[in-house]
Image 1 (cartoon, rainbow over the protein chains, first blue to last red):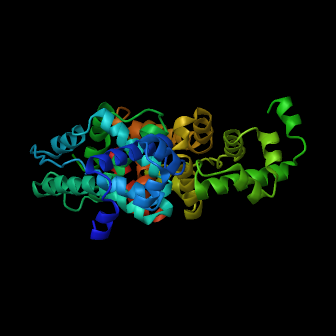
Image 2: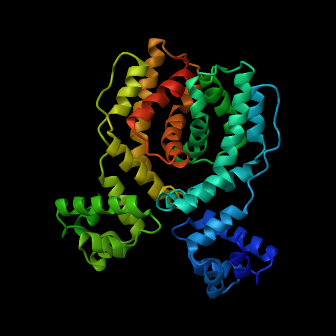
Length: 196
Length: 196
């Protein structure tokens, strides 16, 4: 954070700021980016709209800040000795409730990020890149162990398959993703595509 | 259409109605469901808001009608003799521009369908079920030919993998789906998961 930004925000305690960002993300999950108004943020957080605009400038800035404030879930070292074990362990870090919340956040932002590079970047940093980095670590290790051929073309598409599990469960089946579904999906599709 | 509905809409020619629905879908692709206003529809279609409300009642009704009016693309019989040929032929029916338009429509509706069963149903009938039916025909034929084992668990998840290709290309790679990408994805992921 720049010094100017720190000063601009100095009248809000870090606790209050964290609480406000959490309320913004909750609203985003409920109504989506386009329908989220500064009025609703003001009402939900018992702030004045003047304060919100003074502190954050605009709705896209406030939402991007709220996304960036949320630390990505920690990527504790997973190393079970097999890709199958590693991928299942990676999925098992999130409980069903957390998956629901992440899926709602994605849905709420899915259209808006197309017209807003800053917002897309904030979503990438919060939800996408940490998962992708971690996934790539597991996959590299499986290649090093000789479990997956280094030139297996499916290696580039594991994240696409995973995202498909989340989105299609929602869109096609009208059901929320849970660990039971993900477990079957990983075994039926992702591991076989990798030749396991 | 019920007789009452026909009467209610009798002052609009079918050509004008089709033009109006097309404009509604274009707006939906551009701004998304939540940000689409009846004012914008009125301006884009040079109608009065009073006419729109009199004819369609409300924004969700108008949008569901616009979705249902669009006939799904015709599912010409594809039968190349192999699943690989069939799936590639199925994808080749849409050009890159049509894929873009379908993806934009999905994005525009993705959050809204969660709170609106009627809208979800309309989207399912337009874009999802015809594809799913056709895909299941191709897959059943591959099983009958002995190309895919009848108990291959990936058979239930082909649509999930396909949706993943569309969405993740967008969300993760920030690129639009085109036929070149889909071709690689089908060969790298979908056919191997099916044991081909």
